[in-house]
Length: 319
Image (cartoon, rainbow, N blue to C red; front, side, top):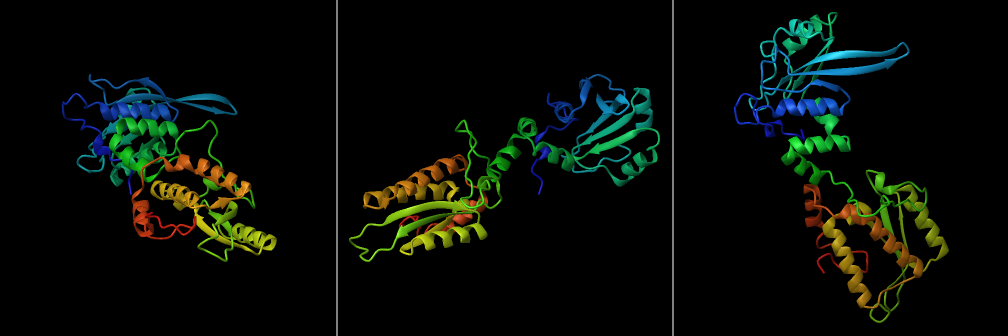
């Protein structure tokens, strides 16, 4: 599903004072991906050209400069593709402006007939098309690209940021949570694994407070099993609980975790020095991923989880 709604950019043929925005966007985009801007957009007679840009190519034989004619067509509001009628006389325009290449910068798609025309002129000059999908793909995969996208597509980017959260920059060091078995960086994986919480077995649940001996985190699956076997081999009088780290990283569930910890400490729950140290480390490292809005998917998960007991002592997420 597309991220950017090109309709956020004003129509080019209406005199609103913003009719040049799509051409300005093209200038900023092409500069971002490495072209040198030779001529900026203006409202005078354009001679069949919206922008002139230059590409510097470096090879074994030295440097080569390639001059490109850029044609901007903003048809997102109608949804129509760009036809040969919309972008006519391409060869004449390229040659008249002393260019070696043609760039079609379109907010929709080039029609098949336009592609056919360009293919027929392949021996005369180079050509390339930046359609809405190619433009979007380049913008949303880099920090600088996202800055440009936010300037021209503020509403689209606000929704995208909510559904694709990034860690808040709260500390000097980048957040890090490495698997206790294989040492992989969990926070860089699609599945950040699980956190295990090991407590002593109790004979008297009413009078004997819960006590956590170990708090550890691992990759899901093999590493999780390795750590479980090791801890059980060390002490058979421990029972384990666990949580998906991805769940704890959800803002609502993180808050419930904190409330659970505080409530249980008030009731006398204890921790070994190592367990408490690791618990604090875990909470600090995941918090930058927590300080954000819930995604739509996470909202549904939270609704389904709200009555499920927490493994931090059997407290429900509603407490």
